[in-house]
Length: 236
Image (tube, rainbow, N blue to C red):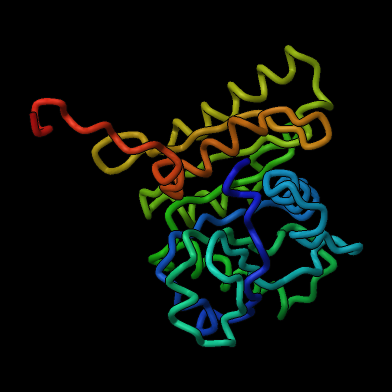
C-alpha cells in the first residue's frame, strides 16, 4: 500500500498568512482546470473524493492541504504535537485557465499561486498536470517561469494519455521533455524537470507517478528496511 493512500483533508486557505505552520515537506499539484488534476490526486491517493472537482471548472480558488501521517486534524486546532506527527503534505493548488472567473478574483488567484510556488520554504517540488493533447499552454508556461528560479524539481503528468495512440503518446512525451530540457540555470545546467504519460481511467503511469512523488517527499526512504549491521562490528 502506498503512503499516499494515507492522505486526509487537513485544511483549506485563501491567503498566504493562513498557510499551515507545519514543517513537513510539501509537494504541490498545479494545472489547468480541465487537465484532470483532481482525478489524478484522487487515484494516486486511492480515494474517490479527496480532491474536489467543481461542477463549474475554475471555481475552486483555494489552496487545499492533505496530510500524510499524523492525526489529520485541521490547522485551526493549533495542536503542535499532532502537527509534528505529519510526515508530508499534498497541496492542491487552484486550477487555472477559465475566463469565467471575475477580474478581481483572477488577480488574487494569480498572486496566491505565484507567491506560494516562489516563496513557500516547505515546498520541495511541483507536480504540473497537463493534458497530453494540449501541453504547455500559456498558463502552464507561466507556472514553469514562476517555479523554475527556485531550482526545485518539477514532475509533469501528461494526463489523458489514453486518448492518444502509441506514436502520438511517444511524440507528446518527447516534446514535453524537450521543453523542460530547455530550462537551464545561469551556468547552463539543466533543472531537475521530468515528465511522464498518465491516464487515470486506464491507470497508465500510476506506479511511476507514485514512486516519483514519494521520492520527492523523502517518504521512499521511510519505507526501506534498515541496513543490516556489519558482521565485523558484532560481538563474537
